[in-house]
Image (cartoon, rainbow, N blue to C red; front, side, top):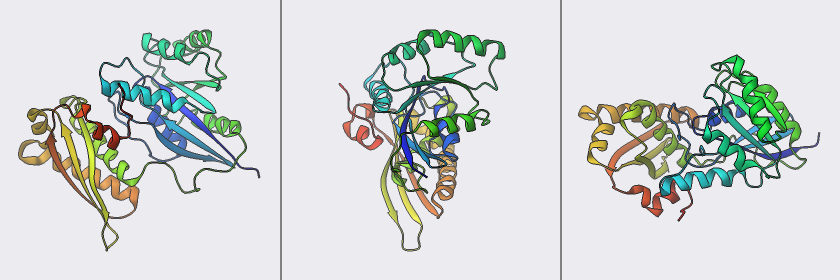
Length: 297
C-alpha cells in the first residue's frame, strides 16, 4: 500500500480541548492537559497512525487577545503552527457558546489555502439543541470542508474524524518511525509533566506566573534517568505556595510527576525539584528558548 503523510494544525480558543483531542487521536498522552485555560504554551506535534497514513497533529496554544510579550509569543506559536498545514482543525468548545473570541479566530482563518474542518468538541456536555445552531452560524462565516461533532474526553466521534484525516493525507513517505508518538524530547516532556502537576495541584493558587526548566538530564549506568528541574515564580509568596507547609506540596508534585514520567519512559526516574524566585522571568530570552517559544517584540 502507498504511504501517505501530512500535517494537521489544531487551533482554537483556550480550553477548547485541543490537547485532549490530539491525545485521543494519537492514542496516548503526548500533550499535557488541565482544566486551566492556556495550559499549552508551545506548538507540539503528536503522531497518529491510521492504516497506511501518518497524521502529524500540531497541537497549538489557545488563541486569545495577548496582553504581554509572553502572551504574544504563545499566540504567534499558535498561528505559526497553522502555516504550511494540509488541513486546519478549528476546535470549538460546543458547551461554551460562540463568543467574540471564537468569531475572531474564525475570521482570521478566512483566506487560508488549506481546507478547514470545524470540530465542535465537548458534545457530551453541550446543549444538544444548540449544537446544530452553532454549526450553522459558524458555517455561515466561513466555508468549512467538514463539520464534526465529537467529545475528545469520551472518544465519541473521534474514530470517524481520525479516519477522515488519514484519508485526506497526501501521498508520501512517513516522517517518523512507527513507534514515535511525538516530536517532543524526553527533556522537554519532563518539564511539561511537572508543569501539568503544578496546574492540577495548585489550581487557582498559582496563576500563570510560573515556568519549569529542566537544568540537568542524564542517564545513569543502571538505566534510570536523573532529572533536575527549576520551577520559576515571580514572588516569594508564590514560592511558598509551591513548597507548601513543610515542603509537603512540592514533594507531592514531584512524586506524581516522577511516577508519570517513569511510566512514559519505561524506566525509573529520579526527579529533583527546586523553586526559584525570578521576577520578570517572562522577559528572559533564555526562558523563551528553553520553553520553545520565539522571542517577539
